[in-house]
Length: 462
Image (cartoon, rainbow, N blue to C red; front, side, top):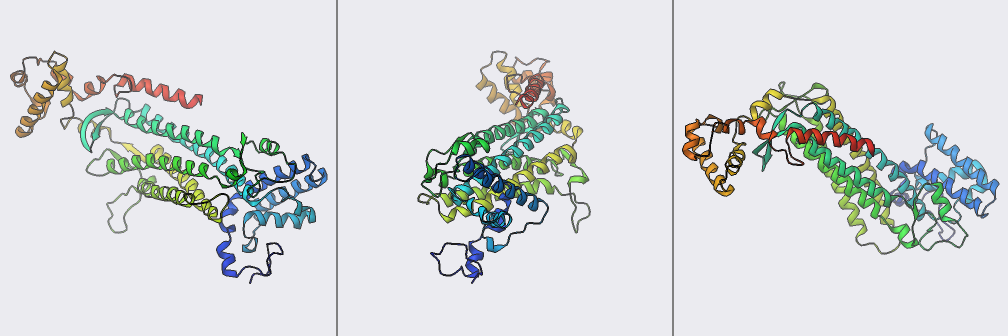
């Protein structure tokens, strides 16, 4: 049996060592220690503010807690398994520092509302860090796009050549995904930033506490209106994991494209040595490890979301020990998202070089200008569906003859339809194909330049 008994005299003996190990969360919830200290300092100030304890006792608790913070930062505080969790570890050390007054800290508070407060304080900070990382990622995308407005890249649907694009336009699609991620995290932040402190174990407390006072000290915008909900709610964590999963979806999609683009078959980008690795047996290899790892780590975050949903879906009110399982997945998701954003930002900024000549030749080697032939005829009064069918026939015969549309003579064009004139060649040139798509949100160079300017203004203003 363990030497020390944490619980009240209701228990005659301590936990079996194996059960104590199984039950403990100190190995991972130590991540919350500074948030636990901050929340406890606010609670101590509130106890003094409401005369539940004396002002002198409140000051002693606050200073003792600050000493623990400094000890932890200096690497001098190492709570073990006997502490069970970070909350008991801090309270035990506080009592060692300030004496019996340390035992008053837990007045009018339960670990249930305490851990809920700590987790929200932690996640609130992490959301801000991730939003800042998203801004760095977006800035790099814009920097690259600025240099590649006039660079063409094949656009795909169904992974088949579709229509040529401005490379900047392609990159701006990822900017918009990241913008939604940034905004989505802002929405989640509002629901994270609600204080459960004072909800007690599940029913509130008999002490004359001031929940709004602690909420103000901790910069929470609101307090939970229902104590049962306050201690058992993990919607905010699920919402964060949903937002985190979408960030990973977007990073994984970009990763997949980088992996394809760096292959010999595509050859659109060159990986620089600083962001690639080699093979242990094939000396010619240069592997896209960064995007492959990002693509792989996406599954971790998805898994944590699923685990959280499964934890919550059958829990009766209010707090249940199952909720201890909310932290490891949440912590890992935060670390994974932050690491992947950093890695992809570095990869884009320092590890990739677009092969512009290869891209230029790529858009000239296919039939991705076929729609423009149909548009050409439609602009001269030919019904679009008729033009569409005609161009399909042209593509079929050209493939059989081993030609591209640009290789057809004017007489061949005019045999297909008398509306064709010499300007057909200009109309189907890749650069003109891109420039002509000048509708709002399109890939036309003019629209892309406007979109870049608007994107810069957007991330500067917010």
